[in-house]
Length: 225
Ligand SMILES: O=C(O)COP(=O)(O)O
Ligand SMILES: [Mg+2]
Image 1 (spheres, rainbow, N blue to C red):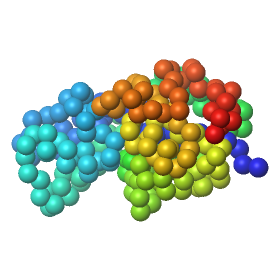
Image 2 (cartoon, rainbow, N blue to C red):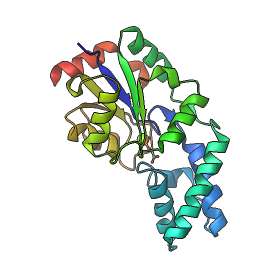
Image 3 (tube, rainbow, N blue to C red):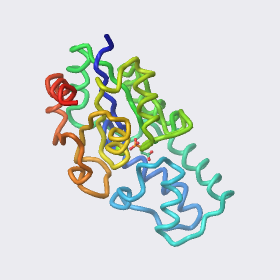
Image 4 (cartoon, helix red, strand yellow):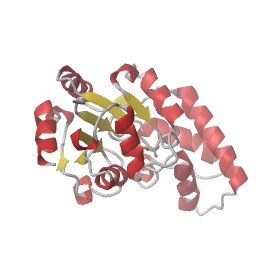
C-alpha cells in the first residue's frame, strides 16, 4: 500500500522566489529597453513558466516580441537566474518543519512546478532540499504542464503514490486547477503570487501558515475524497 503523497508547487508555495525572479526577468527585459517590472507586477506574470513570464512582460510594456528575441530573452533569463541561485530565495515560514512532520509520519513528498525542471532542481539543490523529494518535475519534464492533469498524475506516479491518496498544495490557479483536473485534493496558500485571492480558486482547504500542515490534516482531507 503506497504512502500518502504531498505535492508542493514551488514558486509562491514552497519557496519565496520573487526577488530572484524579478531580478532575473529585469536582467533580460531591460537589455531590450523595457522598463523593469516590480514585485507587484509578478502576480500577473508568474505561474506559466519563464517563456510566458517574458511574453507577458513584453505585453505589459506594449512591446512586440519576435520568436528570435524570445529565444534570446529566455537564454538571458535562464543563464542569469541559474548563475545567481539560490540567491535571495527562501523557503516559506514553517514549511521545513511541516515537511519534517510529514516525512516522520511516513509521507512521500514531491514538487510539481511550471518552472523549468533544471531551474527547479538547481534551486532546490542550492537550498539543500533535494533529498526531501521522491520526485521533482518542471513545466518541461513531460509533454504537458499544469493545469493539465497529466503533469500532476505523472509526478505522483513518479513518486510511487496514488492520486486518491495525494494532496496538491499551491498558491495559484494552475495548482488548484491541476488538482481538480486530476481528482486530487488541494490546499491553497494565500502568501504566494496569485493575482486573485486563493480562496476564490475554491481549493478543498486554505491554510494560512505551514504550521497548520500536519499528517492529521492530510489524513482528514484524503478521507473526504
Ligand atoms: O515558473 C513559474 O511560472 C512558476 O511556477 P510554479 O508556481 O508552478 O512553481
Ligand atoms: Mg506557484
